[in-house]
Length: 264
Ligand SMILES: O=C1O[C@H](COP(=O)(O)O)[C@@H](O)[C@H](O)[C@H]1O
Image (cartoon, rainbow, N blue to C red; front, side, top):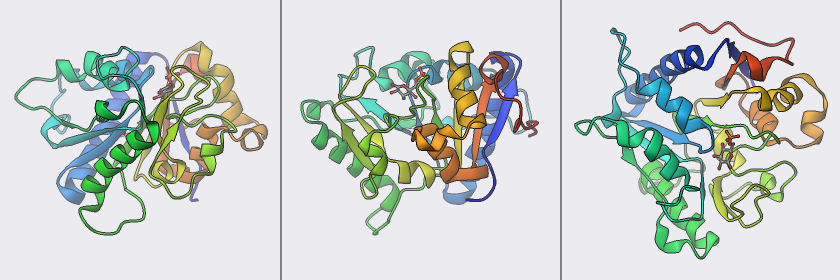
């Protein structure tokens, strides 16, 4: 894999949000040029709040426009709960971001089908079909290619619903996989698999706050990261310079090397 993941550290979350906006818009423009739409996968957890701060800010002119009507939003992982449950990643994104987008320019949002909540295999199959319809369009395609995946990093190094050392990290065929034993509640979820994540055109992690410091240090500084099979480190290794980390100084405090200057 070419190069190393980019680690961008900013003094505070508002600065991070401004730079993240510029980055997402550049991925948006590339996606629209490539195929007329912007196909983005988003995580839950702390990400929707920071993303909303980035994307709901008024445009500063020039090319700084979020073209919501061109966005197709998918979920990088989702919990097997109703869509109006506060644990639902869709619910969190809706509350923080989707409900605040002006009604004349709404994105297309692909949720799980809540009819299949009682069976995570069926739920993963249903969401897989959603991806097939959008990315394969009747052709045989080995893997979907997201224009951008916006991911979180849990304090244990998990991303999406891929957890350290979990057997799902070995999944090589499925695009979407069920999980029934997530160590972080709720236990029943579905997730994009590692091959899908590392196949994206761009991957961006967003992680802020002191409670992310130890794991980010481990991911970027120590030799233990791969032995421990930390999902975030595996994504870094599978994507190289296509991967960018947007972190604040509190989260990056333990990293002494590898930080890059963000320019766009
Ligand atoms: O359970 C989850 O956690 C991760 C990380 O969340 P964070 O609050 O530590 O940012 C999140 O990315 C994932 O989508 C979610 O299901």
